[in-house]
Amino acid sequence: MCTYRHHPKDLHLPTFKSPDRHGTVRKISEENQSLREQLREATDKQHQEMSRAIDLKEKNEYLRSKIHEAKIEAFNLRHLNNKLKENKL
Image (cartoon, rainbow, N blue to C red; front, side):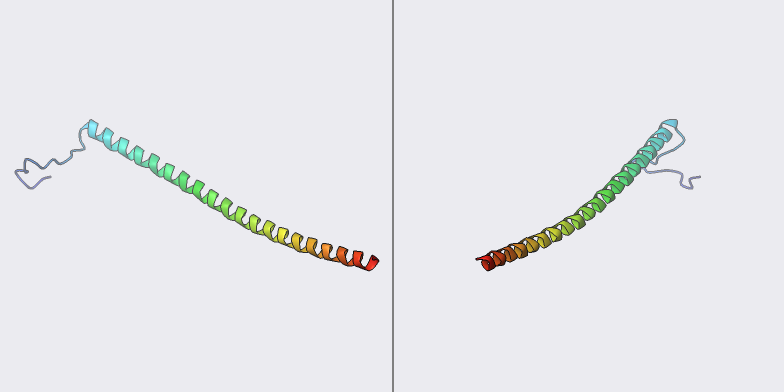
């Protein structure tokens, strides 16, 4: 209950007794819930993509190390082949 007799003319206080305003509040609440769900889904997707990116980075590093090892092995084999050829001559 309001204790003031007169409200300023430019002050518009919402009254939630009218069905139209209840509908508006309900719509806003539903929209809020929908946006929260979209945010949660987007955050979950972002987390999944970041996890995938980390996994791919680790796989890339592993493959690079294997390529490096293969290059070293190829160099060593070439070196040994050259020595064998020299010994045969």
